[in-house]
Amino acid sequence: MKAVLLLITCFFTCYSLQGQDIIKRIEDRARQKANQKIDRTIDKGLDKAEQSIDSSLTKKEKKQRSGGRTREGSEATASAEASSSPSPSPRITVGQRSSFLDFVPGSKVIFEDHFEKDALMDFPANWNTTGTGRVITVNGFPGHWFEISHNSVVNPVLKGPLPENCTIEFDLLLLDEGEKRAPFIDFGLTPVKDILREDLYYKDKFYTTIRRYNEKHGKEVEYGLKDAVGNKNDFPLGNYVNKVLRVSMAINKTRVRVYLDQTKIVDLPRALTDPMRNNFFLNNGYVIPASELPMIVGNVRIASGSTDARSLLIKQLMEDGKTTTTDILFDVNSETIKPASYDVIKQFGDALVANPALRIKIIGHTDSDGGDAENLSLSQKRAAAVKMYITENYAVAGSRIQTDGKGESQPVAGNTSADGKAKNRRVEFVKL
Image (cartoon, rainbow, N blue to C red; front, side, top):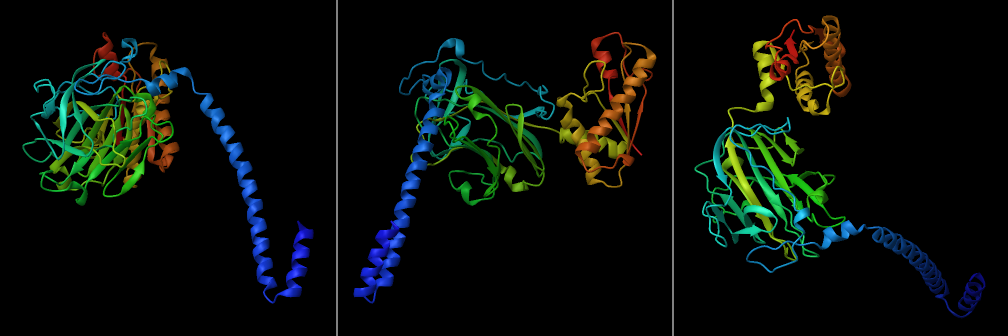
């Protein structure tokens, strides 16, 4: 290469005043060709790696990718085996507490629809839309479902705005039929009262988006206001393909929390304005190319609550000077805190951070199983464990928290039943 460049250099130096320009072009072209050769080598390596990854897919993954469901009124596809059909999420009755501590359904129903009173293939009577939709049945999933077409916004017909404290729950059926494009699932809150006369996209809103759930690498869970605020792309959407995903929302004045299944993905304390509670919407969003699978919704429940259930403990602590909870759980005969308790303890950690002058005492209590001395020691250790969790996970000095234990000496219920013993196994917080 160097010899060729030298000969060319001599030639153009002798015969042309523009020799230097041409030499530079030749050198640049030579480097470009060399880089292209390197790029081709790298591309081949990457292609082999990708082929190796693709070939490692299990038969189960490939089957899930190609498996379909038959929907009444649509083109028939192969039905999944009945043995693999999951049970739909249970309906939550009025006043029933969810199995996850971080969400408490509202007790007074404002709106509820299981689409059982609507004729199949009709648009449900208690809903409004900018597009189209219909009531359907889906093989392997009992009950009626609301199929929302591409580029269609729908909302329940409510008598007025949502109250300051309320919950919204519904099921999403994340169907996968081969290579068909998944719907652009969008839901949230908007000031728009009449979606037929106002475009909610030009208004303030809170939204959560689920898209590309049936793709290997493209799954997205995003949330925000007018623009994106964040994402939870680490949520395992793939586990819910061809299954029911329960969505829960808790609204408390300016605060909104969103849960997928029992996992909290959004907690924004200052996100909402009063007008945003004018309407709740569901949307199979407009995308190019259009989605080929519909958005499918079921078991919708909207209910009001008297207050933010999560704030009751702190409210009682600040107003009454003390509060008690049985939701802080420990391993049997141990001070090891169960992970399900972390969200409860978080309330006290957040309160201590938000109120630098606040000081508390944590007091442990046990039931009567075991000896007096052992229970006294266990209650003291459990109180100390709660303190340690707060100081290690929040910016709270240990000097602001005292601990004590009363063992079984101060029961609040009889120790003759499992329910009574559970009430006695409690943690007390006292404002100092």
